[in-house]
Image (tube, rainbow, N blue to C red):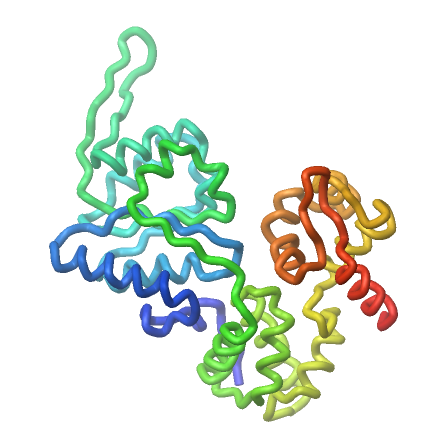
Length: 321
């Protein structure tokens, strides 16, 4: 047995992508239409929590379109010139994937909007009263943008995307399918119950499910265990600090902060973040969605509030610590 990098687990086709059937089916229609028209695919806006498959979908779009895949991170594009060099080197139909799209500077947004709509960029040769602007034509290409925070993307830029696909946290049955598929790729035998437990502890996120599987495989390898069963998974989860409810250490800290320091709430996200030493965006994008999905926390106009179910779970977790 071996533990490969994350790309090993990525689906090789849209048919292999597990979950979000409606999203995948619609995407197939858009891709097939573009190919029949011998045209580039319209720009695609991917929205969803971290680890839910946005990058995988972007790669599959490029593969299905028989196009080159060029990936950049928005934080790395600090000024228009950084984007210009990428745009001018694109070939017809290329897929330009921009991750963390909401972090694009406004000056870069303005250049990208024109490039996406008119396939041209204006390059300023000199600044000041004698400045000149040269218009450079571009070949048709497709921007695939991924973001966890679509509200931070300006409306004019969002309107340039003809296709918007929304992903969300996965249900446990779908996550179990992903775990079982990954185990099969690894050549590892895993019982049905073990797959269920891993799925239940994966916070609705395939990336977490696959990372958990890899860590449990580590325990199996070192322990000379050939079968990943319920007993091995439960023992591994204890060592990894993950409760059987699926709560991770940071989840428990979040709930505990609400209970002990704010009397169950309401409490503002900035106050909770300061107490935990985390960024508010980290709590909103990564921690909160799972707690909200499980009904352990609710958002109110006055702040976050711990539910009765959240209190029960917290007491249960503390009783087992």
